[in-house]
Image (cartoon, rainbow, N blue to C red):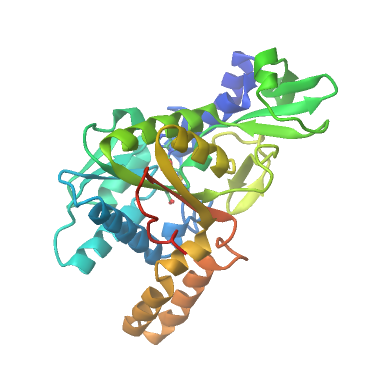
Length: 352
Ligand code: SAH
């Protein structure tokens, strides 16, 4: 039995939220603590790993948002959950090559995994970058231009199952070396806060995501800045069971190997948008990732890259473009939402 299974067994039934936290970020056995998730040799591929164009366009979006805010100094460019560091490297290079000047931001990366922070330090070597391990540690009193790509999906969710007796919380327990879902009672007030649904349906909520969005939105509303959230979603949320495990580029059982597989759950953009608005921000979108990147001019960028690429790699650039924008790949299931202080005009990609 793995150390994580043993810990879950000793803890007794735990919530799905606690299970995700342990499986992803346990200091000794968590997935992000121990493994390198990205790329062909890893478990999954994210947009910045597919193509440099993704980070470039997001970097230029942030630069334009900074200019639209009056080019404040100092200002931070923040990335939440930067993974390999590739997106930020591409973003900074694009800003500098478009403006012909050093990029104007203090760069801050929010990363919970020391192992991935080490990797980011290598990829961004030569750059003045600082790290925080949590959003609450972000420096205050300056505008923040924030990118969160596939970050919210890694934050834990709670799951509730509709039974004949009403909503019950889905829990994880280990007994006789077997890990399984079981059901536990919920308080009347929690049950009353969940939507109505047919017996057997699952409802997902994420107090962790909601709290983090509340903090970030309050910060942007008072200190200025902008935020781009890019992530996968699913129709019908929150009454959906979207928790998924991915290992070696395939869906895996969600319980079998905690710490060995990535766990993620689809993002409820409507819920995040409501929270941001309640804190005084304006929420734009979500729009599909394909439409967003096309609005930002990804096709033109691809053509330019192809012109300077050797013929054998030109086709590869077309494939990258397709993977990022086509509805058969990431173009439709992934959505983009922009959050800005109330009264700001619609930013690039959301004015169509
Ligand atoms: N944005 C990257 C990586 C996505 S994977 C990309 O698109 O390639 C999720 C990232 O979020 C990883 O870097 C992981 O270590 C980090 N992460 C997960 N939970 C976190 C938390 N609670 N606080 C900070 N970082 C977290």
